[in-house]
Length: 169
Ligand SMILES: CC(C)(COP(=O)(O)OP(=O)(O)OC[C@H]1O[C@@H](n2cnc3c(N)ncnc32)[C@H](O)[C@@H]1OP(=O)(O)O)[C@@H](O)C(=O)NCCC(=O)NCCS
Image (tube, rainbow, N blue to C red; front, side):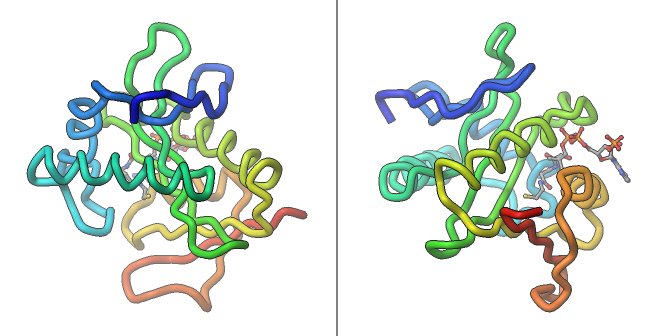
């Protein structure tokens, strides 16, 4: 986690790998029950769990060139949240996004995720990106719709609706 890799820049945001000193912001995000309400595993109870998640992100970044990246504002470097991919297999990436509640509704998740999708289909060489939204997570469904995902009901589980986006879409 010592050297930070700049991953993408959008109109308002920077996506980057995590660096030393991010633990508190990351734990503020992943330790928040409101943020984690529909996220598997629920809120991180202690900072150690967050540190383990950051270590796993660093490992995934090194192995596959992707992870859940840190998102901050270009103007001022305010911590916004996390966005990026869990890697399902060589061809499919799973998109995820988590935004600090005081920054919800500003279009940040959609903007960050759009940059991630561009990376997925170019530098990361993915053929397909998948995503899962809890049935009750209306904002997440809306983000996926805005990004052009289509429903993939065959992959639904009891709680989550599955979505997919192919490179040609
Ligand atoms: C889902 C989440 C990332 C969205 O972040 P965000 O930055 O607010 O998203 P955006 O502003 O890009 O888009 C949100 C959209 O949902 C809409 N929305 C918000 N609340 C809604 C509701 N209750 N019902 C329907 N739509 C809703 C917004 O109006 C917006 O759509 P619009 O642009 O058409 O107006 C954020 O709510 C979050 O971090 N939730 C907790 C983590 C999570 O559940 N992540 C998804 C699973 S990986």
